[in-house]
Figure: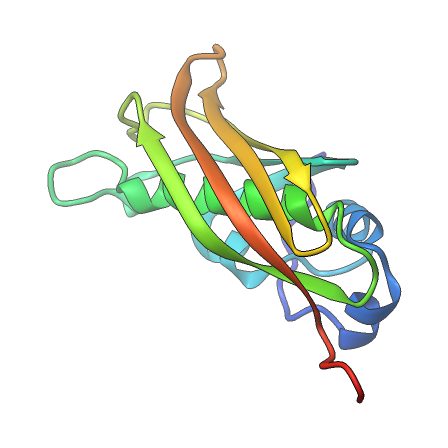
Length: 162
């Protein structure tokens, strides 16, 4: 799905009332705005399912580091986003998550000639408090560019007793 990016903070009532999967599906369909980081980084679409999320992006010269390749932060942001959002698809309504560990392995440099890439995150394990996911970035020919793993802490968005 490639829809124009609309970015704004998510409505708090959506976070409180929708499961993570419902929320991610609403963002993918355009019914809810996507996270502003996607617009900043040039994400140009997403697909969602139970336990997985894919983001699409096209690296440009605007993402370059001083040596003329795409900065590693571009891949790290794509992987952190797709893996954490995959975790979000397994979170109940009223719960959130935060990344507590992120490990990225870069396998092939990206440039503005790389073309569109796909970053896919998949949940490995999810419990009430801790979730882990793995991710990969591939180019249009299926060449593996980077991989990652993450651990996320799952928590209620509203402190107990309020």
